[in-house]
Length: 430
Image (cartoon, rainbow, N blue to C red; front, side, top):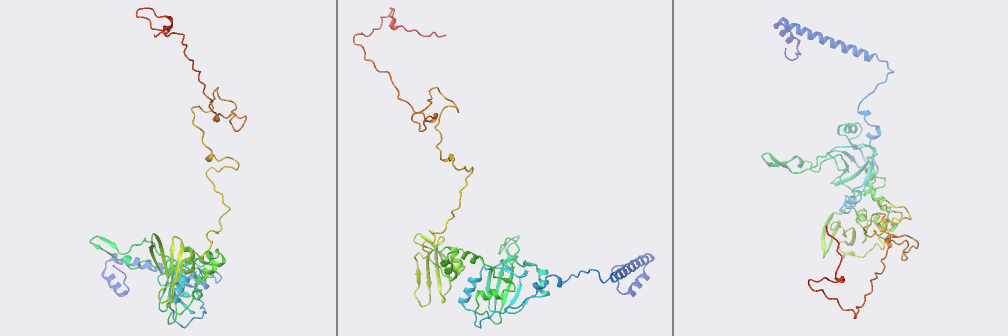
């Protein structure tokens, strides 16, 4: 018998045509079937006989997340009835790009993310939100820090990518390869790391209105809390009051560094590197015509020139230092102590600053009988300083004039005995 017959009549016909061995096996199968049916009935009776006061654990979508994480309460932010313009768009990028906050609830990971309607509901929400978290996972949990890494302003919505976004940098091209025969090369390469970011889409009714960065943060408050101090605010608080107010007013002064410019105006829309004679510089360009355009020129880590070009007006150029003596009077760290290897105690001479001893053929500790006990030229009287020896004057014997009365001796004649003055005693050689 192959398979299971749902029709009993067909099963009976096969059994009648089969031999006695087939009938015996089919009877055994029927007995096993009756055994399992009886077991299920007994188990069901035992379950229904449990007292009502027993503890019961219910597992389902309603218990996956706390209620405050699945419900979205709409905001009430007054919005303009005018569509967004170029200046407002640029201001949003400056104030929201790289902004940090803390998540109010676990944020769904995935390509769709969360669709948040301005002053309205969110999709998904409720049990659908818990189901999406269970299917796709969470990018961040409640209370964790998130960073806006990318922002796209469309016709009727603003798309925010958090912590790198949920998609690969080349979402489709990474799957395409070109080549011949067995040698193919992918069009786009990546490191193979799976993205763990998320996406939030803020949708409006007909178009994106003229909103400020604070209004957008209030519209995103059901998901992200931006009330915590951002790194930009933390950096600005360390500056003097006048300079802090200048940065908060989004102004750039000649003499600022890169961090101050980024805190005041954000990332530039365009960058260019050029050369003025022998001095290279980098030009940061903010804005596009017909709006106001600001050119910030940096040499190294300092702003050397600021040019503001307005439509119909002559450009305003600042090239003189506007920071005063800020960099020369910046507070220095006074409570510092430089520690070297083998740090010395106070009051002891530094061996690195002591002159090395003069070279000598003496062995360590060796003395000579001619060593003076006290050198009068030593700065420390009474000390026995062997390294402070001085050489005395050398005395030669006086020269004696020859006696004219004494005749010079002459050499003896050959074969005669020389006088005693010509004889000398020489040592015997063995």
